[in-house]
Image (cartoon, rainbow, N blue to C red; front, side):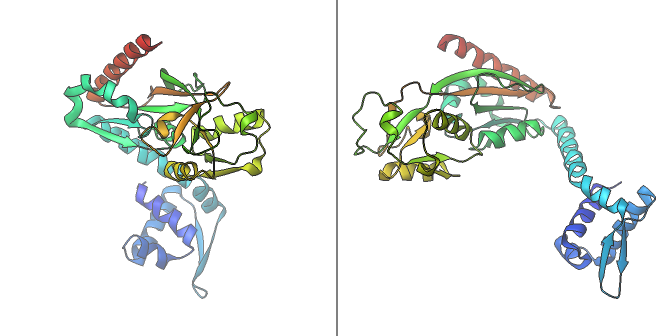
Length: 298
C-alpha cells in the first residue's frame, strides 16, 4: 500500500470532492480515482459508492473504518520513514525552549564543538509541543520545562538541569515594585496575565491561583510570551512566571514570591527513538555534561 493513496483518501473524505482533492495535490481526477481503486484492491472491499448524477459519494462501512484510522496510520508511516532516514544521515538534533533552554546552551555547548557542523536546533516556546515532538519520535533529545521534578513516562529518561521558583513580574512603577517579598494576599486585588495551556507555566500558575483563591475573572491568557511581557510592562497586569522569560527586559522587574511554586528545567531523552550513531554519541555527551553541571549546582 502506498502512503500517498491513504493521504489522497483522507483528503477525499474530508473535502467530499474528487475535484478539490486533485487540485490540492496538483494531480488529475483520474489519478485520485486510480488511487482509490488501489486501496479497494488492497483491502478487497468497496470503500465508497459514487452517485455520478449528483456528483457526490458516500462512505461504505469499510471506508468509515479506513478513514477513522487513516490519520494514525499516516502519522505512524511518516514517523517511521523519518526514523529510518535519521539513521542514514549524520545530522544531530537538539530541541530547546529559546527563552528557557537557550539560557543553558552557553554552558552546555562549548564542549560539543565536534558536533556543531552537524547540529540542527529545533526551537519551540511551548513545553507541551516539545514533549509531543519527543513522544512522536521527531526528536530524541531536548531541553524542556515541567511542573514536576519527575515526569512519569515509560518512553523517556529525564535529568534535572535546574529548578527555579516562579517570581512576581511587574512594571517598575507598579505599587508592588519596591517590595522585597510578595505574598499571595498582597496580589489579591490585581489582574494577572498568564501563558495559556500550551505552556507548562499555565499548569503551575493555575495550581497556585486556585490554592490562593485568586478569582478566575482576574486572569487573562495569551499564547505569546511577548504579549504577556507587554501586559506586564504596561502596568495593566501582574505575571507569575520564571524570571528567565523576562530577564532581558528593562521595563519589567522580578520579585520573590512567598511559597513560590517551582519550574523545573530538564534534559529529556526519548530512549525509544531510532537514531544514528552520531546522534547517540551527541546525546550521551550532552547528558554527561548536564549531569556534571547539575551535580555542581545542587
